[in-house]
Length: 439
Image (cartoon, rainbow, N blue to C red; front, side):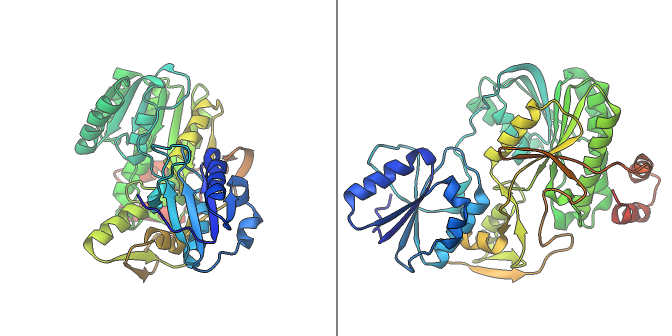
């Protein structure tokens, strides 16, 4: 634990319930300090833009939050502090005692990581939940989060090791959860049919997908098979076995897609909409995320590995920006989707603060000695992402959640889909459809 030398200007932000307590303590014990409290409203106001840090004379104190959200605006604020050579510290919530404060040197992960996922407070449902890709980062997090919310959770994943370790973790840390782990590939129709036949799930969350943009640019057949055909099989079985809800986990890369991966998810989203319009008894809907902080394949774990291999990180295009979300925001959104009876809509998080990757790199390297290697965008990558497409209608917005209505489905959509999913069609023809067909 650190005991920092407090400077003339102190700026406090973070856990709302602790802001005043820390401020009062500092005012009582330190004289002539200029203490500024930035709560959520002030962080999201024009006041933040006007804030002037005292060069090399400012201290920023982040009080670790129980619920971590609004990463983009906080990261932009801290990047501004770093540019002014401010000292930045974190007050951890664990072992919190009144008027006894232990300071840690700030790390970027303080803004998004949580020690253990607390189960959802949704009322327990006497229903079965099936999650494909359930041993992946998001899928596994949802398994833990809903460990007390469903009578049974069926976890499907094709990674044996990931499935094994998730099973061990859940059995130890979430002993009340009733889980069944199924080693399976979502593109194996026979195997998936047997799982639906055995368990008869009422709720289906389809999170299984290939997601690495650069790698997938040259893997069209595999991407179509996994991300589109796999989605079709799951949706079809959800209908066949009378599920109540089927939820597709999608990505902002499906909006105005440039990459093969993004286009495959756009097809999956449209397919989900098609099923919603042709299956009256089942609610089909889509959750669209941006970048989930810390998830497998996201930029932060990549930078972690790069620092293990060399004393530098790669920065894709200094002007590039992305939307970043914490896993707790994903839980909040998924809760809302599960409680919503509508069908055919796309749910996403309201986020007005995309973050420049250059700013993220500055925060990541705070108090570290490493070089930033500037590169160009890789094939399929976009400079800026969108959460809502220009041809989509915003139909409802409450709290931090936006609900949109997708564009209409083309009359020849299913015909083109059958071509994409056919084993008899040449790859070149499929590539042409992926490239040129306007969804």
